[in-house]
Image (cartoon, rainbow, N blue to C red; front, side, top):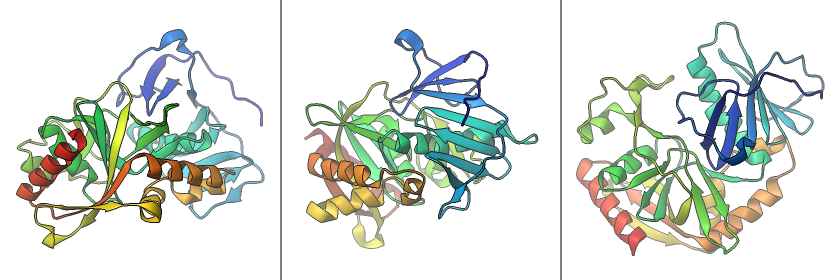
Length: 308
């Protein structure tokens, strides 16, 4: 497939451990330059041709184009993700750029990480001092809410909903800084004593808001992963250590959507990474209910164990 050229990249960012040069301004991120300005990923706006020999996947909006991936997102555009290094966005004429960026930050950058062989977890994470605790689980499990209460207890945001983890040469698992905001429901804001006035509503959920917060600037060691389970009988929260196959299954379940690997051959390598991570960090099941006092107590326990 021929390379599509474009103008000099005017915007520079860093997120998920990746240096990104973009033709499209990304106001949700903080602009920054890095030594030499050599990007890991380029984001371009391009008119994509009709792509031949597309292979469908189990996701209706995702197709494989050779080793590349094509996302076709309603009301936004088409995103061609190539070689873990480039995202070409063919923006629909009437598209709202906020929606275009939303799919860039979610599916497209997720696929970039997948193509690069990076491990990404469906988790929100917070640093206490120099160690990170991550809260994993499906949509609606309360990851962002626990992260927000962790910030109120003195933590610093590492990521919301999407956490990239790498294993350093010494065998330490490192969590990389993600987006500099939290997405919180109105009732979570109420519990934190914060008004939604002036906050940007989420595109798909009017009662959820983007909350700018203080966030980590550098990678930090990931100490533990807590997989959330809702349990009204759990009082202030119950932690149960997972080991062996149970820990591995928890990591696999809360990592890349398996459908992403239908576009390229990376499933075995990803499973091996999950196995290494399961041996490197502590993995817990965290059963909790969601009343305010329980959330505060759960966070206090998580903070204490993280700093122990």
